[in-house]
Amino acid sequence: MPYAYPLTSRRARIAAILLTGLALTACASSDLSDQQLDELAAGTLAVFDPYRCPFEVYEGEEIDCGYLIVPEDRSDPDTLEVELAVAILRSPNPNPAPDPILYLSGGPGDSALSEVDLWLESPLLEDRDVILLDQRGTGYSIPTLNCPEIEVLDYWDEVTVDDEADAAAECSQRLVDEGVVLTTYNSAASAADVDALRRALGYDAWNLIGISYGTRLALTVMRDYPQGIRSVILDSTYPPEVQAYEEGAVNGLRAFEVLFTDCATDPTCNAAYPDLRAVFLQLVADLNHHPVTISVDDPEYSDPYDVEINGDALSDELFDALYDTVVIPYLPYVIYETGQGRYDALSRLVAGTLAGGVPESEALGPANALQDLVDSLWGEQDFEDSEGAYYSVECREEFPFNALPKAEAAAADIPQVLHDSLLYDTYLMAEACAVWGAGEADPVENTAVQADIPTLVMAGEYDPITPPGWGRSAAQHLTNVTFYEYPGVGHAAIDGGDCPLGMAAAFLNNPTTPPDDSCIARMDGPAFYVP
Image (cartoon, rainbow, N blue to C red; front, side, top):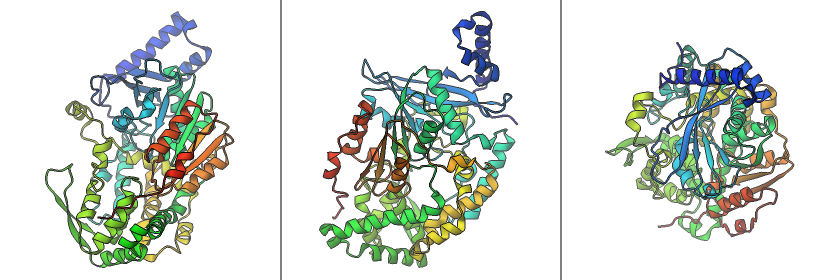
């Protein structure tokens, strides 16, 4: 069956646009360049189709939305098209810089448009327009590779690797039955989309900001389409030359060890939470033998709910918390409180309210008074992340270059009590990639990118998933680059305070000169919470 497009009239409107282009070719061909005429004949001409935003735009906000229409498979002239959702946030500056920012979100599979609220508040919007692109298969793009089959799994109910792999197989088969060519959802194809978007919007140059997987896509664009890139910020870098699944468990333990060491060397933290590492490991072991049930008061739900926490679940929650710079200072407190049978702090960690914040999904989701309309067009879906896009990228261009025995050998020195938690993703990918059907990428997708484009590489000291060493690795192969590591900061360093954000802004204003980094010396690491 064909793609289930949410707007049945879109195909006719797209056809009309292309027919208009054909008419221009016949009647006023001078309006199109020779390159555009060649692309039109080959079916690869990128078209930007303005359309209403899938989220509420409030008074005073200038946002233009639409779809970039590109071939699903650029090697097949008869391919179907994919439609990539785009939001252009206009700077309040009446004379913004001519080179906007293109934000490349992570995952792979995260929706950039779901972060619109954060970008509307960003100081980086003051001088430049910011463009958000939902990469192919993600967010509001069409088709979506979202997997409800995976989302319905209850992760508090002992979901196994086999459960997730079976759900992935179901999702893969459904997408294939709908006509999706899974092998076309990857970094190289998305890099071509990025270049097509720049040309379709008419920009001579722009700046790329990638976070997490977005850095891998940015590096791919730098490799394949360097023209038109003024500067690049790589934040929490995931470069192609690493073996992510062989290193994953070791990288996770590294972040935990940073926490234990910083607490031990901080007199206040050490006095309140002595022997934090030993207490944590014993707590994980105890909870794996004797799980506890805690009540979670999550603002996303009207009533509290109960969850069972074993040692692996605790380890997973703390691992995820290491992403968040604001939450990191509370983690020794959570460990000790949980160890003493007081679960309020752990409950608030699970709910996403430990540091006085709101759950991640609420924080990142756009305010959306059009939700009834969106639901009627799309059905109820999770737009924030696409499991299918994740598997299509990772199973094609990362996992095939990893070996499960090497991952297990690398984890040999990790405390045994953490093995199940820290190796889970590697075991899952071994099973899921075997059934997903993404194919195997050319070895170039596992090779370091070389480029001479002005680049700022940023890393958080506590980042458990894209460690600072990965940023250094990428920087070693770039000839016009500066690298900075920020103490006390987790994943997405640019969100780690005024220092990294200010340095990013300074770099964008003058990418040929390294930004002033004196503020880093004033970052002392986490101010650990002690009641």
